[in-house]
Amino acid sequence: MEAESSPRSRIIAGARQHFLAHGFRGVTMDDLAAELGMSKKTLYASFSSKTELLEAVLLDKFHDVETDLERITSADSSEFLTALHQLLVCLQGHMGEIQPPFIRDIRREAPEMFQLIESRRREIIRRYFGKIMKEGRKARLIRKDIPVNLIIEILLGAVQAIMNPRKIEELGLTPKTGFMAITRIVLEGAITRKRKTKSS
Image (tube, rainbow, N blue to C red; front, side, top):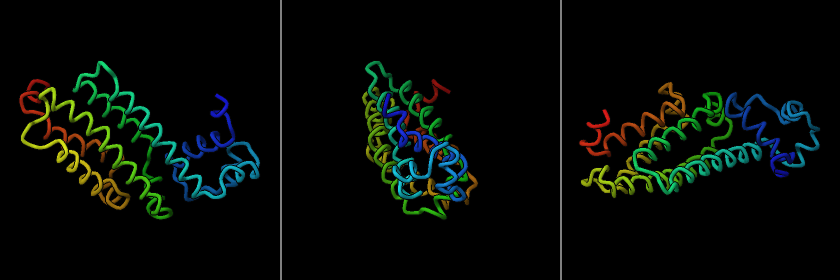
C-alpha cells in the first residue's frame, strides 16, 4: 500500500495515463510536475529524464499485462476456449489504453524504446499464447497438422510485421484493432474446423 502512494508510483501512474492516451512529445517534465501537483525537485529525484520515465511507464504497463495473463492461464478450472476468450478480452482491454498519439510519438521521438516493446511482446506471446495453444492441443481443439511452435512463430511474424509504428500509421490501425485482427486470423486458422463450425 505504501509503495502505491509513493512519489515514484504516482509519477508513473500519471505519466502512463497521459503518455499512452495523448502521447509524450509535447509534454515536458515541468508540465508533468505541475499536473501531478508536485515540485520539479521531487519529480527529478525519481526520474532524471523523460526517456527514463517513459521506460518506467512501459515496464509498468507490461507488468500489469503479464499479471493479468498469468492469472488467466494459471486458473485450475480453465477450459481452453474460455481461457482463450478471457486472454483475448484481456489483451483487447490493455491494447485499448494505447492510442495513436503514443504510437506517433514513439516512432518519431523514441524509436529505441520500441525495441523494449518488441522484446517484451515476444516474451508474452511465446509464454502465454504458447501455453494456451498447448492446452488446446491436449483438448483436441487445435489442429494436429501444424506444430504449436510453428503457430506461435506465425503469430509472432505477423505481429512484428504489422504491429510497429510505421505500419500501424500506414494502415490506419490502432494497436487494439491491429492486434485483434492478427490474432483472430491466426487463431481461426489454428482451431479445428469441427469446433469452429459448432461455435459459429
